[in-house]
Image (cartoon, one colour):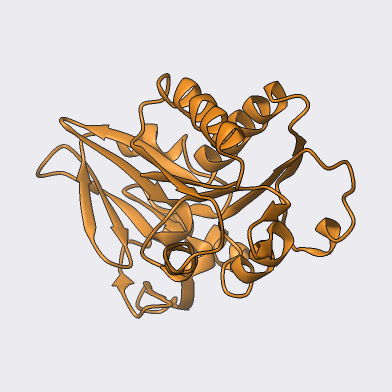
Length: 232
């Protein structure tokens, strides 16, 4: 689920932004929700601080009721450095925006087509940071950072994706899913890829990997030990 959060006090621009999002997302095989806010409200504050709401894309005007878009962006970045922030404004002045960490884009309302380009780039960026998988009637969007390891599931002829919170069975070969992974993942066994950023320690004698949440795997082959040592 992708959450688009539009913060704009101008109803006309707010609705046109919604139309642009719908136009783009109708071609995407992904669930999404649009949240509209005309000012800084308790509901907006709640979604900013809600860590269970993932894949948030904020589209902020510079002037939004009592708080400015810059103030809202700073509020977001107090504890959230993952969500995407795009400024969409009629103002040409960018003073203050460059001081905010990790701003994805600044788009002028004079040329709304550029917002469409920017959002398409956001979706490409998110795809590089997550696995988007179809499994029968279920669609998964799994953040790569949340994955500990992926191993072959012989019983179901697929793979098991192990995250912090669950084990997901997907009908896909390990070889095919490995092509979707980034350089954070290394092969430790012919039946396993692990996220090297999530490794806490490796017991090479017993060939056991301990992850930062203390989950473990023994899928470490002698053949892959040298590569593992080089990558941690």
